[in-house]
Image (cartoon, one colour):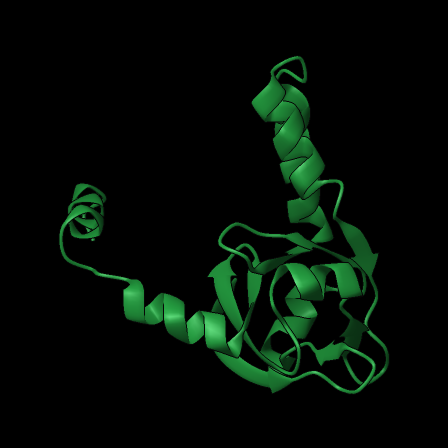
Length: 142
């Protein structure tokens, strides 16, 4: 399970280091793709296969479903970390997520989100736990 927040800097080649506490569960081959809210998502291969199966189950004849397929699968790529735990974030994904140097990786149980530091800080200033989110948490018994 992926938990917590980690701060990193990309190297000059656009590589990010996988946090040590995430490496074993992530494995030697994983998938990165566009995420919602202008972040990048990293999925262990097994989790990605589940995501693919769910996407295959929705009707491709629906325009919105096709758009989501293209968004998620069209931008996905396999990554294999080097011996130091680094992997390259493709330029197209860095541009999508506004990532240049400083990044924040956030463990979310079954996946990792990677944000530009600025966007993560901005997002956290906007999040309001009161109201609708508080009600949803309450419905879950949290």
